[in-house]
Length: 377
Image: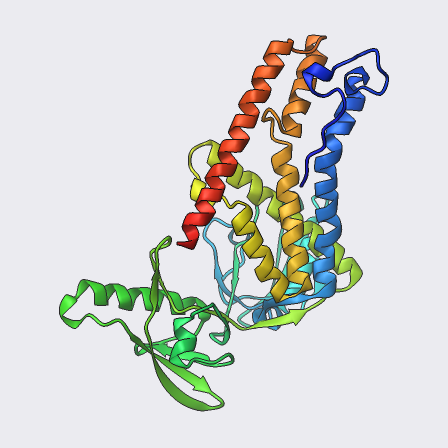
């Protein structure tokens, strides 16, 4: 992001008779100038997001596993076209897929102009399903959940699991005697046990027993989960196993643009919730949080850093196009008013709107910086 002061953009500098002055330019020329900044943000994201997939970054290990469906989200597009739990996806539009990674790649290629055809193995029988490419593109996440092997990959800083002796590569088989067959079952088991423990003061305990399989041997460890204040969830501080995977140039372009489109919809949805009063302002991050996240990404690898920079650039481009005075989107909005009105807004009106816009931006910066500092305490 950045700020460029244009000669003649301020009211006191306007001179329509000077051909080098911003005020002397046509509406189209001024629109082109104002849109250039956000356009460069979006172009940066469009260039660097495919590089993330071309270089390769750590991804969940299930991407190398056959696309066997554990669960289908209720009301999702997958449910609509007839996919069921325990189906195994064999092909998308005639292209066979061997794993979840290939499935995601083929789904990213589906356009609105074509029919989505999926072949699945259902208890040994071949079933073919069809759906609209347009509905698929507009539906958001498809609603398919994979089987996630309960194998530990990484730990958070000061992880209770790591302190207890759990190691990367360990397979979680039970949590306090409850069998674990899928990674998604670990957290509910932890929440249930800790909540029962808190509710029963006579037998309250701060630790739970995790049964592990390590190199063919069974191990037992006692872990003391910590309560995350914001989410009010008990955490072990570990994540599932990941693998590094890279893609071909064409796959990277397809996956990169698809991921950007998903992030664009997610960003617009979040902004919509904020303006409607449904979202939490506490989720907004400022310069302190951005610096910390960039530092973490840089330590993780160049692909992770490129992903984060692309995402931030995308958000800057979208935010800067909002019709808020002092932002490029606000200036563009006033240009549109000038176009339909036949003349620019009065000097006093423009000065007042700019003052309101700057006040809003300064207030927002103070708020998000305060949010960042409070999150460190």
